[in-house]
Structure formats: C-alpha cells, structure tokens
Amino acid sequence: MEEVKVHDLVFCKYISSNEITQRVKQLSAEINIRFEGKLPIILPVLNGSFFFGSDICKHLEIPYEISFVKIASYKGLEQSGNTQTLIGLDESLSHRDIIIIEDIIDSGLTIHNLLKNLESFHPNSVTICTLTLKREALKYNFPIDLIGFEVENKFLVGYGLDYDKQGRHLKDIYKLKEDNNND
Ligand code: IMP
Ligand code: MG
Image 1 (cartoon, rainbow, N blue to C red):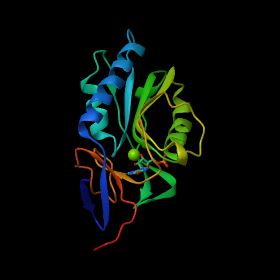
Image 2: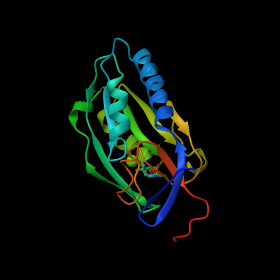
Image 3: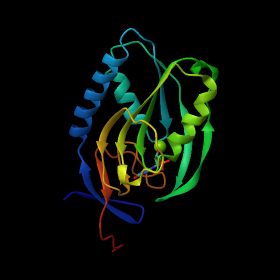
C-alpha cells in the first residue's frame, strides 16, 4: 500500500485523486440542478477546502458569487474544542442562498458555529457541501446536504487536508496508518 510520511506520522493511501475528481463532478452537477435560475454565494471554509472549493466551482455551469471564511479549530491531530474565526463573514451574505464548502466534518463544531454566525444574515437558504464526513465523530445535529465521501474516524491528509500545516499538497487522500511507529 502506498504510504507517505508527514511530520512524524505515516499515512496510507485511502481515496485516489481519480475518485475525488469523479465525485467532485457529481457534486457540481447536483449543485447545477439545485440552483438553476438562482445566484448562490459559495462560501468555502479555508484553509482546507481551497482545492475542493475551486474544483467544485470549475464544474459549475450556473452563475455564482464567492466569499471565503477562515476558521481554525485543530491543533495537530486534536480538535481544540473551540473555533477561531480568522477571516469573517460580511454583508454580501445577507438574504442569499449560501453554499458552505468544507473539506471535512469531524465533530461538526466548526459548521455548528458557522451556522450560528450566519443566522444574523438571514440567509434565504444554507446548503452544506462537504468533501468528507466522519459520521462516527459527529456531535452536533444539522442537515448535511451534499457529502463527497463518508470516511472512517481516522485522521486524513491530502487534497487540502493537513496535519499541522503539512500534507495539503498530496493529490490523493491518505489516512493515518494503524500502528504508527516512528522508525
Ligand atoms: P470539526 O469542527 O470537528 O467538524 O472539524 C472540522 C475541521 O477540523 C475541518 O475543517 C478540518 O480543518 C479539521 N479536521 C478535522 N478532521 C481532520 C482530519 O482528519 N484531517 C485534517 N483536518 C481535519
Ligand atoms: Mg477545515
């Protein structure tokens, strides 16, 4: 099995770039159908969803606007338990059809807090589109409309996902290897 080392840890190949490309096209096609005749505003959550967000947008045939939000919650492999908004929301979101683009939903805290913050903009609708979902780890309850892949409850890197800022560049997605020794 193909392996990579990021910092001190070994990860093995989990979802290939081909599978990602195919799934992204399907998700974009679904967005094209759902938002036909509308002008949604796409809201990728930085940093992790920069590849996923731009690949989704490349396959959209409807017009859209885009805005970014930057939220940090992880420190290394652990959820820090709270979220910090580093680039915020602005008035362009008021009364709009918002499509949140996320790389991974783990506990759900990041999206839970983002949804709360979006309430003050009285959106017409909010759609969540996530590349991956760790359903087993989910602790918050909100509707997740579009899911690329349901994944095991293991730490992932690649295609934008990082382990302590590294590993984002990998074309495929890798999962943390079971028995990680550091030789
Ligand atoms: P949540 O708030 O627990 O749902 O975590 C969501 C955020 O944590 C994601 O946007 C990622 O930035 C980060 N995250 C969660 N799981 C992973 C992972 O397996 N690899 C890399 N980042 C992750
Ligand atoms: Mg993220």
